[in-house]
Length: 448
Image 1: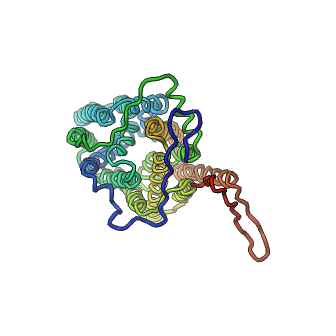
Image 2: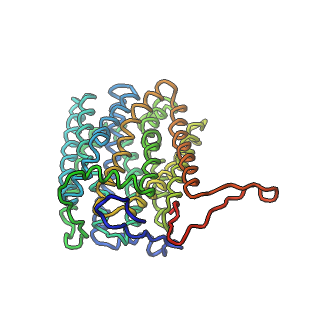
Image 3: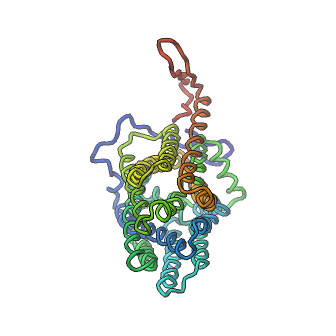
């Protein structure tokens, strides 16, 4: 792969595509790096606590207002700053120490969680408090999210980057398995406040862990000097590489529609199956169970290709739409697990492909664009899906949330086929035969 024209960066090195899956003993090869082991251990705690706060926050808003739209507004408040200012976060990440930025952002998020815990435990919390804190967390996330994405490369280096992304995804979903289950118990037993307090403590643990990493073992990216046009440069770079552009387009559809699953699961738990807070936590845990299996499965894949990313996004959409057709809680729960599996297949493949095919000098801006689309899409989609669910019902909302991305994946697949010159030939003996033109020696496949 080569970088897009008109950039100041050298060509990106070719991305190796392994012919066979890694050896079993190398399934978690990135954990052989001491710094990454320590980072991952703290991440297990942090991700569980983040999921606890997310579930508790959504349910608290639902209790305070009785409105699914209000839950969607909370999502929008937290993610809209990324939609407006996200690209500036990437510029900051490319200019500063990723480790120091993470220590600052985690300290701020921990303080905000503690404030929300005090308000909830004292009984003084109002919905505008939740909105305001969610908004401030959203502004902090402008820097926190891309810094976290790029910092993994500084810990493990390019050799273990793909494996580290899979391990990180596994940890995130392990947190998604533990966090909602614990949050459901806390919501029933003592209320939302203690979930916020636990997240504040987890942020403190993360800051301490970052301070204990061996800085001499980090593979630091040289800070980018200030210059004009760096924001536009990042956008042009991403738009000029199909391995970055097409996953971002697919992500945009999924973020607006499919990633707002919590809004719909709240409606399913409260209105469709009447399972309350415990059921809401259970549904989120089921999605996380499938996602954890998907993340672990991704550590066994031989490589990642553009067509795999689009296919995984389409599968996720189809399964999520299917969930909306399920007639009872057992069938609905089973499809949630499968949907979670497809979700992580997409995210691991997309994240790996984008990072591995972007130059280190601009990766902060590329990943800020990735996070902007992921979180900004949820900011747009949260209220949208809330309105759809309130006016047309949870079943219709779930079908729409999957069907739109599935159609988008089909259209992107057709576009990729045309770029590669694929054609379908029909004959009496072979009704459908896919013909792929053989690329020239110096011409990379558009599907790589």
